[in-house]
Image 1 (cartoon, rainbow, N blue to C red):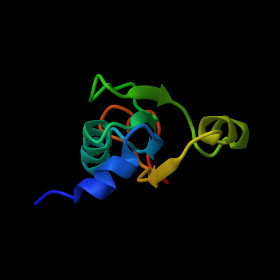
Image 2 (image 1 turned 180 degrees about the vertical axis):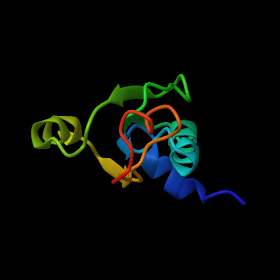
Image 3 (image 1 turned 120 degrees about the horizontal axis):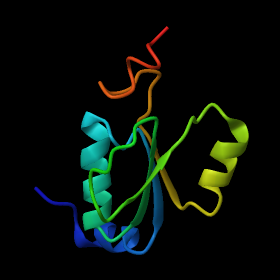
Length: 96
């Protein structure tokens, strides 16, 4: 099942930020938004590139200035990040 064209047309050309875009669900959201024609930025604690059409940024969303700069001029925000990381970052930043 696909989304109606009116929704896809509304997404085209928008800037989108996906937090946790390297996670299991985030990867699919990044792919969907790229397919819809969005300019996608993914932020994560990982240094993984999942979709070459998206821009990947490594950073900590708990840092206010980083988050503020990252969200400036962003049309859409999909928040999927959580306190744990993937198997790549968990050894260095274990969940509390």
